[in-house]
Length: 209
Image (cartoon, rainbow, N blue to C red; front, top):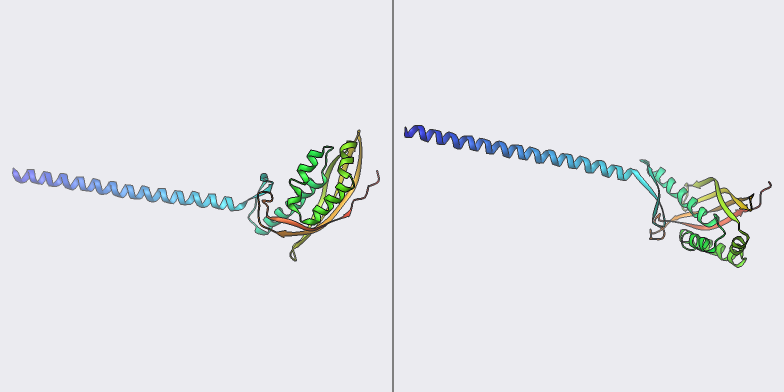
């Protein structure tokens, strides 16, 4: 009798140990499964983040482009920087506050002293005051941006037009510019980490109607 009771106790202990071992194995399997799932998700997120390219203007995200080719990402960044600068500098409204915010507060951080010299020359000529007084609204129309990546700094050419509207009438002015793109330190005012240098306006003539 005592033998049977001891045998039952021994069996109970053995079964308890087996259950405990199964629980340990299941717990380890669950932990391994969770780890693998987390690793997979993190890798997918990192891969997605690497392939997402953000074009920024003064801290504002203007566009999100999904790219896997590094060269294509550089092309998007450079074209975007040139396009945004021209929009800020040459797209004007009859409002001096608006003009100063766009040019002094944004565009001039994207270009070297060549852009500042052009801006100061136009200020001295009362160009912006004349726009404000006359009620001109100038919209920039981009035709193409050509960038040469064969040598550094990257030379670019912007080709477009200025659409000038006043009192229901529309005129056009040609706009062809050139300059070079250089990498620079990213700052709160220039998050793209690029700067236009040796900027020059090649053609800004009125176009015939």
